[in-house]
Image: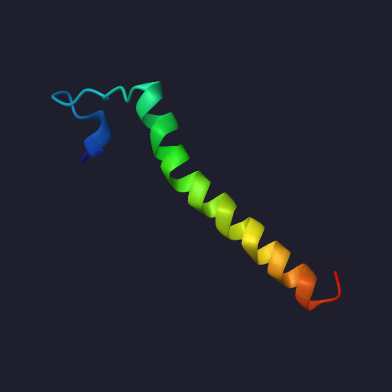
Length: 49
């Protein structure tokens, strides 16, 4: 019976630093929030806001 690769005896789980995760989410989240803000602003002007 084969075992999944994640539970192989020669592989250990890696630890990603929290600062790197926060930086990555910031890198994605800021442009996303800016785009959503502009979309909502344009839509409200278009539909009588």
